Image (cartoon, rainbow, N blue to C red):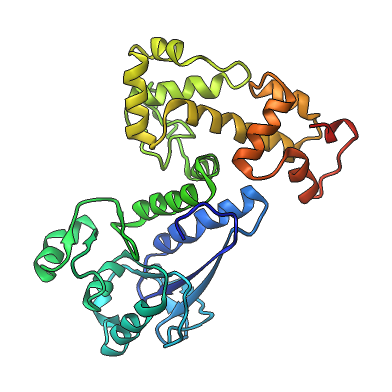
Length: 330
């Protein structure tokens, strides 16, 4: 599941009663966003419940089920979603089904309180796992054979756990990054951006920063400069000088904040801007290349193909956009 691939990933979501609606959205919406932005069905999900009937979320909105969670020998990754009163769902039958599923499922994930259910089924023994901060102490005492850690999410070879709704968004962005690359993950993260109108400081969130934890104001400032200079990219040394630190220091801050060096983030911003123009306009590719900081159409096409696994012409053709003869040039 966590290897580079553009093949469709099917995921089963086992939703427990009294799950938060935002938790369910935290899993689904990044996958939906990746599908929409890519123009491909990269992800498909199926909603399951313990008995196959709908379950009510904490907001009273029912979640319909495609089926019940049974004893099938499925290899599809399984995400177990739970929020409040998870103990009511932790029946011997459910624990047995989870234990059996672990023999076949490529990955089983405990989403928020789903971590409790995985631990109850002894699926986290001798593994690292995380849990919502309010439950950390109780969880650590209840399961001494689980290495509880205070991380937003934890990925091991066949288990995943998350510490809440927003950490689950982070997890889904990381899955997209590992499967489709940093560029798509960055563009999906922009779907979850927001800005408070009452805040007018230099540390205000950049649209590209949401979901990537760009809390350091120097990183935020550098990203804003990148976004304002797509057509004529700023070299790293000059960018760092304008932020007020050394290029080496800026590289370290970027790596800590985004998991990528500045040049990778900058290229991702430019490629995402270019892809929007490829999809949403009829502009010739040479014009798009110039508008996004590439010195030639051929250099743009090479970089585009390396990131999106198809050429700009392929994208337009696949999405059935009308093109002109000039747009077909590489």
